[in-house]
Length: 91
Image (cartoon, rainbow, N blue to C red; front, side, top):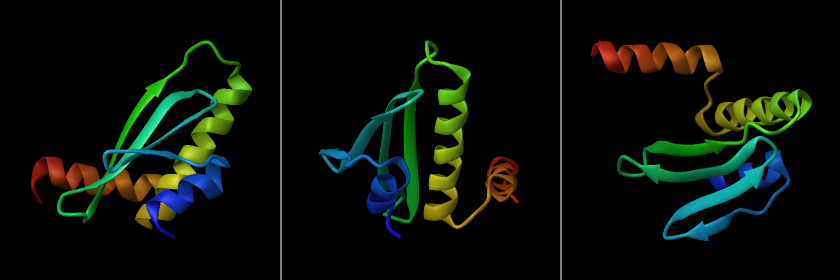
């Protein structure tokens, strides 16, 4: 599944496109922006969170965000952390 249709599927919101970037607002996310970067081989994500929402909304938003990242990258949260550590260390 591509990164844009996954947003609609998981968050139930059609993203707005702005200059090649796709943006939604959902639950505890005031803004979630995604775009292809690194020669279209990587997913770039930028978020702005809300702090004035109930815990249940935060938990739901986090669950959906993790599901989104796993679906579009193919990696679980644990695997993404491991890959990020490798990139920082330069292995």
